[in-house]
Length: 277
Image 1 (cartoon, rainbow, N blue to C red):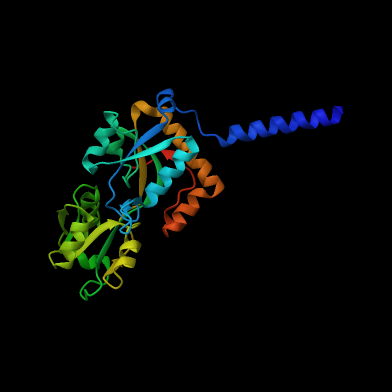
Image 2: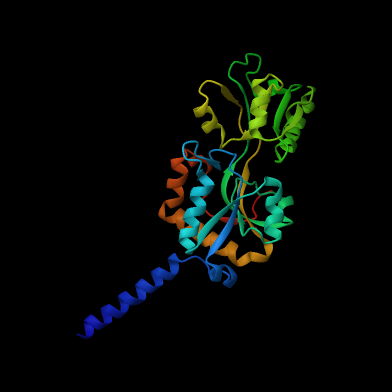
């Protein structure tokens, strides 16, 4: 009888310890009391964020990750479509609790909000597959390359051009800011651009939707971290999300979501705060 009581007590302690280890860091009282988080998203960046053409429902990597994080935290996720330019201010003014919309974690953005880094990617050159005069990335020197002006990609193209074009006595790339990635692709098809740049995570999806239309050139210009944005005043929520993501990485949930979208190469091994440069 005593042995059974001892075993029962040990099992109870182990079960409780295991439960504690599986739980993320404590949620802020303000979030816990309302029972939901408001997540900013702009569904125009497949496969990270978009709407299923058949159902018009939100889908993509960020949507799947957000729903899984919400489940871990015991919170409903209320998605709010938000213009990209308004996402950071939405966090600061507390209209949004998080931003989960393929946003790059940069040192400049860290001055205003915090980022839980959950994915790695980089800006990537691509051209029309029918282009015959561009075989390697350096062939783009002196040519027009378009990308969304809302991102830091124009600056990254200029930086790459300085190192690989001007430094070698070749003309600089002419960087053209566009209204977004879709606009850049449209201008590329119209021959108004020689090439375009968008996140490397999006190109396999675009190529699958338009087989034979585009060709990737070279390697990503730089490695960047994609971050889930949280207000600096909401550090407790950042900690809770890091705990939830690390648990998802440990049990395979995170990997299965990336595999669903063929983006395993972008996986991180640990969720971290503000590691973008």
